Image (cartoon, rainbow, N blue to C red; front, side, top):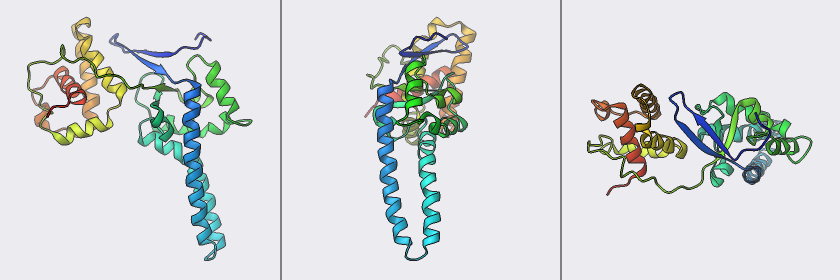
Length: 255
């Protein structure tokens, strides 16, 4: 790996399709970290007030609850948020940052837990110095926790919706009548996943037939695994058409 810092992260699938993501700058990551610190500090303040109310009843129990809750908040906030929000804490979400697997695979809980448990190392000796230096000098902006977990932090800027005029077919979109499914997909599909599906459709004619079938089979399996989809919505629908239907409901609003 070159020591030169890169600004983008490129992943090439086994089918030869490349996707590009923008790496988050150390400055954006630090601002997101400050927001998260402020959130945890506010939560700890509320916790302290609650524990103070319990002390007159039983000081020992109140102290034990305070200690357990304190460490739970300190260690559990980022782990829980990044796992529930698919790689985002509150600070990351506000700044459109996301933790992703460096190989382009789905982020696992063990990766989320490991990168956050190693924050105490990145925070040494003070003011997040070790982690900050690592993020600046590594080619892909990884702190020690990211290097150990095999993760990256990417920036997902607001992008205009892609031009789907050339991708829409004449076939009926069976997902359109499934309002709950459409709402769920719009909620849980990340911008990166939506963009990847659109790019696959845009480049489908550049793929060999076998690679094209495998790619859209993988994409269809991924989207179908995100939420329960009624059998009638996929019955008789090819994998490529299903991905086209998903992209259509993600990007296009129809009255």
